Image 1: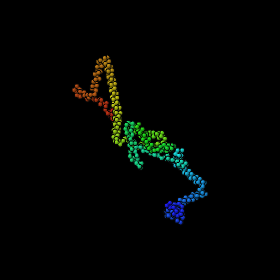
Image 2: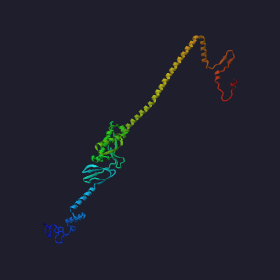
Image 3: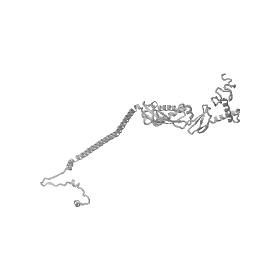
Image 4: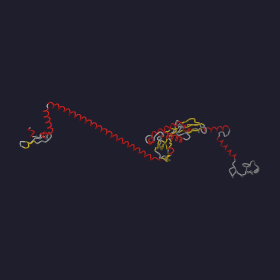
Length: 381
């Protein structure tokens, strides 16, 4: 051997701890000095001394080993205690199999690797964005996702829908959420998009853009909840919020122009209907009034003619009884009608000139005296 019998000691390093010629290949000295290798026996001895100090009785017999093992097991079992916060639910598992849930407070389950506890937050409100992505600050839209937002309506139009789905873990079934959903956000987003396309496909674009947005959101929430319950997802859909509903950007201005034209057409039709509603009744009323006037004139004319005929027959009967007297009376009545309203001047044929004539009609129409003044002529009459 290359290092045999160099110092008379046994082993490749010679005598350990000797002071004579027994030198190791690294020279003289202990394990700490001058590059000598570590003394393994010394290390083992020191470790045994420390273990004896720790074990009661100072011996590494069977009793001490049992106590050591029991102590390690006790410490390991104590690690099974855990705390469930008010917003959490504890899901206990043994060898990966679900064994039950635990509520708020200090709880216990077998520690790892035999047991495991998951504590999902069942009160946190989480949001899934469909059709757009918000800015990092959560204010406004960073960009539109057209492959999610463009949807076909019942009247074969395309509408751009951006909406949110707010959800949380179902506190009654948190184990379904933990074990049945591998990608919760992706699953909920796919269900939300599918439900919205179904609802939009049953409505016309005009109703979607105007009056039925609230009913659309409510119907989408119901469809999502039914689908997720069928999947056993353990998720509650609290609300669906429509952020925007409008035509696609490429045809938006043209759509607004068409919509404005349609509204103008409706407005003109309403104005025409209002004008017709006002004019037609007036025309009908005027026609009815004219017809009534004509009927009244006809009745009056017939009545006058009937009265004249009856009067003529009566006069004729009287004339036939006394022709001479009737002719004289007719003459006098005719002269009365002719001269009754004419100013008359009487001329005396005996040469006296014009005879003064007192107009009796003017005398009867003389104005009455005003006030309390006395009329001397009226007093003498």
